[in-house]
Figure (cartoon, rainbow, N blue to C red):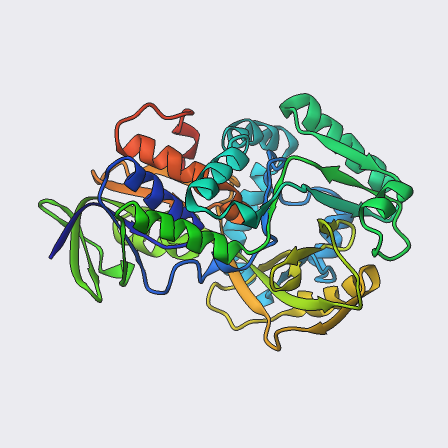
Length: 414
């Protein structure tokens, strides 16, 4: 039996970041996953470290947008009718937390994590020798109508006043200078300048794994469902044998509730499924920034693999078969925006964003089980918040003073 100080269950960007920070603080840590690191949700996303995202994505309160979503007509959102009865309790709570007053209060707590997101990534990437994967280009939200652009400017100004978020409002000429190969019909955009784009999120996760192993950490394949309490702490079974540690961290993303429920924690976790596919650019076309076509609901991101088209949220059963309806809707829109050539992959990728109804992650101890810790529920911002979550968890687990009050993220808030 292998003995360690800590076991981290889940080798996505959050789990890997927790493991790195524990190992940096001298805690012998084993990272356990059923698959190779970074092959679930961390494999596919828009590749953004979203420094501006102090307001997490809320349930739409605007009637026109809500109606579009309800009619299942948007590329930005899709749902399975059969899943609605099971999802209804989550959606109702999500809608409740999305009221303007509650959303503003959530942002105050969420901002404490977001404001450190870029710095924590830059620090780990430098240590991991992977700084070249991070590009300080920010990202651009595109608008086709003057009214939508005016509303976006108002929102950006509020973020600047409340949280110091920096941006540039782009008119048609500014946008053409920044992105000369975008199509016509755009009025302008908002360039948030502080976010960092990642050219290959999977490669970044693997770089952090290599840093973890360089620091003395170990990785193993195993099933988190074998986790059990022992007199000495916690034990899990892996292909390399049993591993026992005083502490265990559940960082299993969309599957975290399976393990939490086994120990009596009923966490209202749901998933927003998302898809991506890559294209070659046509001719000598270049996309300089990640761009969100905000009125049409899709993202194009320049990646090492090509131009990545990503979708918004699909509400469905976690294990339901793929239904890339949103990609089918978004692809002709994206081709109208940017000169895309052929698809690189025949089969689109799908991932699962683990979401909680109050839009904040769970980070902290399990109140009834000493040595059991949770780090999951980061929704759209797993990549953004991975390293900052790892730091906060490691500080709590080693008895150091946490950089911020962790109380808003505790599991017993539910």
